[in-house]
Image 1 (cartoon, one colour):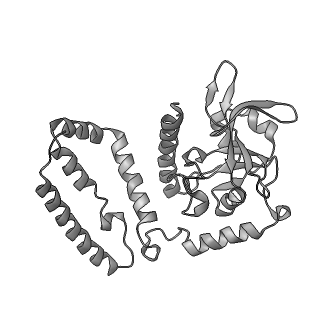
Image 2 (cartoon, rainbow, N blue to C red):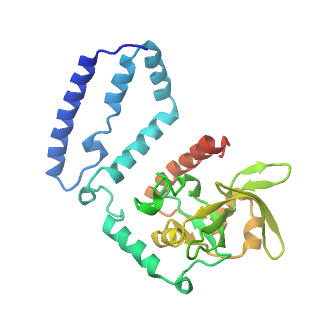
Image 3 (cartoon, rainbow, N blue to C red):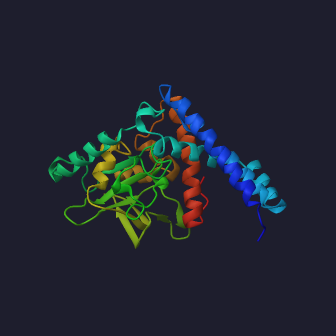
Length: 284
């Protein structure tokens, strides 16, 4: 193990802490402040990493030269803006306020199954902008211990297999997941290891392995938030005849604003990284 001068490290940390306090004081004087005002700590981390030794300095240089570096930094800044910046100073005027999120969750819980927009067989499409951080908002229903990070829902198309009631979870099947068995034409349908399932339409079918399992109320909450939207058409026959990479568009998915296009491009990368990390699959 390489020894690092502890006094230098502690000294640098004190300097950074003082600088951060000054930046926060200045930011509070304005209308809002962001990760750029607060600082993301990346420069400090890089200095400490380089101080460990030449091998680590080389590794850092290689990482910074890759496209992954800029993307990772941007995701950190977005996480800071969502999770660390007080919402009254939040930089995104369209972001959900915590009180509104809580009220939406309560409204969904009170709604009866007859009032729900979601039924068995309903086709849903995932948002192109809300899944970058693995969940659309911060809420206990999306706690890691009960909700798998959902970057794979980015531009997803799903069919509802079962709507959860009581203690029974909702089940969904991803219809535009990657192929996991090219010889048998089996697609990845979700992270729950439920085995192979055949999703049938009136005249066709699609074979998938795995399903998405959600705690009761979570599916309806995601629809309420707009993270899932009911597809423009519920014609499963027509949808599964489309090429896999065109099904989101066929389900009514559109990107209308330039700002959304930029966010969607980041979501494309997040989705690729998710499948690479958790399934060791390259998705383009």
